Image 1 (cartoon, rainbow, N blue to C red):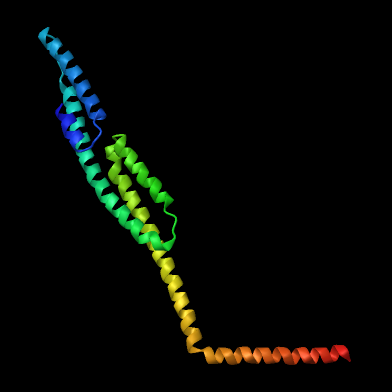
Image 2: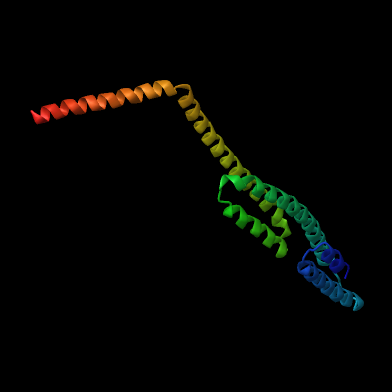
Length: 177
């Protein structure tokens, strides 16, 4: 009952813990009956289940902390990436997988998978930042080149147009003759 109260207040699923507690209680009850009959008893498997329950509890808290941190990073990531027109569906799928692990009580996998999501978000963010920087640098470079050399460019284009018309007239004279 204590596990139900604790985990329901913290919004953890407790089926896995309750199953372990029931198994431990069954083994304990059977060992107690054997002990009453004067038989040789072994409570070590009960202690093993207690250790498993404690490990699940610790993993659940770590998963909860990791997921809380990941949700903050994910929301921040989505805000930063909005203007870049980048496909983040892979990150969305990874986030849903982490959420499912918590729902399915696979708390042990959450920190490692959270790290994978963080790495993927960092990769996407750095790629989009690099692409944006490249684009702005090239655009700025072309713009400044045109502004700095617009007179030379106009002269060059004018010369090309004059040469075109001059050769066009010359070719027409040879064809007509």
